[in-house]
Amino acid sequence: MPALISPSILSADFANLERDLHRIGRADYAHVDVMDNHFVPNLTLGLPVVQRIIEVAPMPVDVHLMVEDADRWAVEYARAGAASVTFHAEAAQAPVRLARELRAAGTRASIALRPATPVEPILDLLPEFDMVLVMTVEPGFGGQSFIEGTLPKIRRLRAALDEQGGDTWIQVDGGVSRSTIATVAQAGANVFVAGSAVYGADDPDAEIDTLRALADEALATRA
Ligand SMILES: O=C(CO)[C@H](O)[C@H](O)COP(=O)(O)O
Ligand SMILES: [Fe+2]
Image (tube, rainbow, N blue to C red; front, side, top):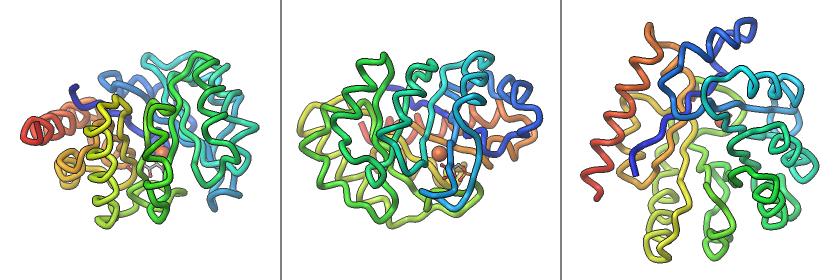
């Protein structure tokens, strides 16, 4: 499977979101970070704004929920038409029930792990999830530097999926750029979120192509 690029609009101009969604027209997904100032020390946007983003975005929307009450909110984003909804393992009371509710609502169900959250508790549950998001920075802010210590977790997850024959995607989010994307792809990730690297570039669409090419090259050496 080719690498998928999901630029984070956290680094877009919030007063010009529709324009900035069209600046990433070659992206596979648009990644939307929802933060509630409780689960993370930052506040971004909520359901009414995400509903409009989904309506105007020229690509499918990948919602990353960084909210305390995931069990309450995740399905609302699926009903709003998100193509993928990611909730945090640390925030969900009943992650498997929640993933099943998301799938029943017609979206891809995804679970996220903070850098210090181990992957082992979900290894036997991978068929319940369409994607696992391995956070490669502490969630809350864009523009942070990649945490190398998350790589063994990505490798363990990829090894478990290879062994099980599972088709769950592995997404990485935080500090992904030209200098780190090959490393995370080699570790086993196949979906790449990049905020500051894409929106900080003069030509975001050209940067998406560059990142995708680097990731595809690394994935080819893995296979
Ligand atoms: O979830 C996030 C932060 O919690 C963002 O998606 C992520 O940080 C993207 O930003 P960058 O690529 O600049 O690190
Ligand atoms: Fe994110």
